[in-house]
Image (cartoon, rainbow, N blue to C red; front, side, top):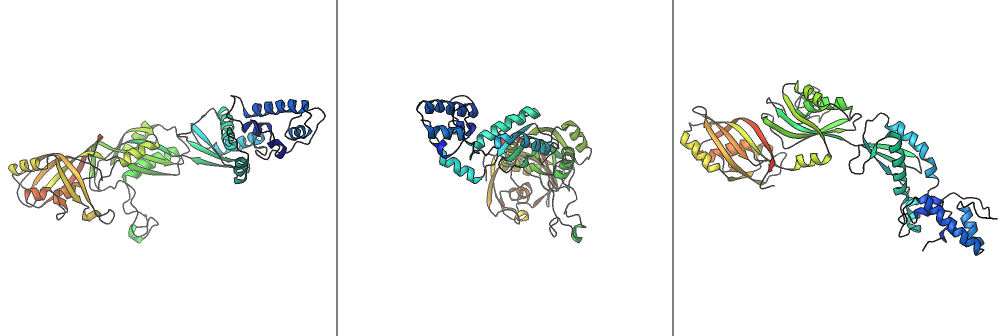
Length: 421
């Protein structure tokens, strides 16, 4: 049943009265409300219901004979739909400096309006927030020829149509690819000075950094400049130590650019510019979405390493064959290495070595090619870390060994660990 009695208490405009039954009949709230009022006006005039006729007149029905009540402001919308053109001009001014392909309207409604909606709510009602967001979104889309997108908008335009406040949420731009670190001595991410925490002091020569450059900066700075963003964050599929090279097919990563002003950039040219550095090389840059960042950060991939090992005693070919056999499909129990205890919880991790190839280099050196789960500490797999890693290369050979050089030569994207932490 249509609740016309509410019009005696509140002079709802055509649009707002139609919105009470917004889920009924495929038409606009404006047409629905006007039609319902006209139908009721006919009935009220036949029945000589003066009170209802006056209520309908106050709510904007001008077709009633002999009744000319002053039209009252609608207490629900308060005329916000009449201000859409003005709001559109202000939105266009705010977004003019941003390049974007998709958008979303975020409508903010005052608490008193929400409370009013609860008071008059019907089973078939559409909220004013829904209608304003939809109608303003259609108006903006026609004006700028861009598409609204609820899932992954480039920009969210927040509007309080009652106060006429407007603010932008410029969503990040995500670019994924792979990187190869061709030299040792560079950390993966920006490393702030431990004394000043980035402010600059005598210990860091007022740079604010422990290391002057990182993989993150070599890749991120050119992209930040091209997009005119505010800042950037680097997300890698794991990380290698400073003294470890990342070779082979490269490590997957995502660069997240905060508040970019330019989104349509030439990624091929960016690859060429980044690769001029010579220390880091990027491959296969492409645009991606937030979910790719989550996958890259949280999915542990199997990896293949090359390690140059020094042994204090000579190692025979027979011993190396034994090492290959002992480590094949072997579970490794690794207590958190001493060198990372200051930033990692002290617990035992179980990882698996699937295959090892050992080749003698000289009397005290041999090379290992290790195919294993991601998250396995290779240096400690070799040294044993004073018994914290079991078994280890040192314990199997019964000779003290250390890793002299380490390279990641493949990240196996399609092969996740058989066992997670």
